[in-house]
Image (cartoon, rainbow, N blue to C red; front, side, top):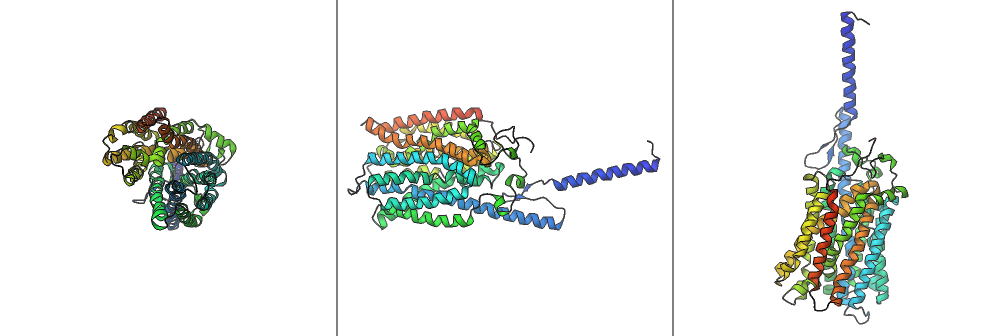
Length: 493
């Protein structure tokens, strides 16, 4: 068809105006998130009208308020769990000297093992429960039950009751980690997760630092009764459960906000790259099974099993190990030496989270591999570093071990578990990985005492740390093939 010159010009102009209008409409419909300077939180870019700007600003403010609230209350809740977890460890000092109870060191070790078994089983149970019923119900129940069990232990006077109650306490304690990491997964997206979770994972190092001195001071300096090692932790944890009840929410949708990936303009991660996000049904047994069969999750579980014995050997036997290496015979000095290990736990998760986000562009495994290989070296040098018997050498050894251990520990048990389990399966993934790690922790709790009994007069500490070094080296090599692995985002986004 041939147009007169004026008509042709008119038709061309119409087509040009229609194309421009379509492009502008598409631009308005497609948000392009940017970062709000200094806040670390996204800022909406809808600028079509003044009303749009006001609405976006309100959403930003609500998201900022709720994200800080969730971060703070979940961090406090998990740190609080340590107040009742550490009660038995502190009470041992008085229990071993109380003839009315009749607790022996071997009995105390067996009770610790019973706790670890319950804790490992609970990780599987409560991780799946958080995916099916939500973190709020699981964690609140755990906080209140842990408080009640701590009171019951304080009222107990027989070894049998202490063992039964501490086993149940292991089940209560395991309601914390996997459900709370799932809670965080719904409020923070992948690109910021390394830094945010690194900071969040300081909760268990902080909890360990505070719980023992607080319980010890109240039990032995204020009340002069081992029972207050349990009562004091129970009282504080009960107080912590109150703000958790009022301030915590499971996900943005619960308070009328859009999902975090949509708000940030990021793709939604999936467990199976062949699936669309909507095809993976949160809390279904089929999806939970798929999380458990995920190759990265299986590898992380095995690596965590190999890593956790070293951490728990120092947590449960650190004062004894320090006492064996010290030239002096000061129990007070030996008791405080492992604090260097916990202090490093406040630094390492933050550092590894920042490195994984910024240097490795949200790839989680490179930083873990490097840390594990360095940890293997430091563990093998524990003997030479502490042979002089000086407190400085022992503090340095504990600090270096903590520096290279807490980073991959936090990354594998939280950040990477969230990402490869996805937020829908984060509870199951974290529970699965931590459950296997908890079975590894049994070795860390039991081996120091058993080696001392089997090889009296032998420097079993050096042998133990050589074993931990080999296990850590194997863990690093197992992760090496996953160096560039990132979670799939699926199809049909």
